[in-house]
Image (cartoon, rainbow, N blue to C red; front, side, top):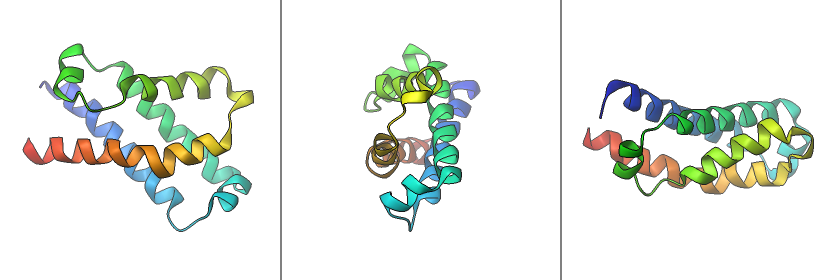
Amino acid sequence: MDIEQTTRLGDILEAVRRIEFYVSGISEEEFSRNGEKQDAVIRRIEIIGEATAHLTPETRAALSGLPYRKMRGMLNILAHDYANVDIAIVWEVATVHLKEVREILERHFEKS
């Protein structure tokens, strides 16, 4: 895998780790009232989606367990339908779905 693709995957992993840090120790209710936390998490989800858009078919095949369409889809929702973003879905992505992404990428980088 070339350096540009490795860098993109690293960007995704770093964004996931930051999101997990941002939401650690707070409840969904606290998150729903904290605009700064929401902005930080949403920005990192956007980075994940943008980095995903630059992954080659070969990279996607090498890491076939990642939910590429969902990762890119969240960017589209956050960037283009920002007025209708459901913070409960952002919370769910941050606290449930990104764990799998982190685990897959950590395994990938451990092998590298």
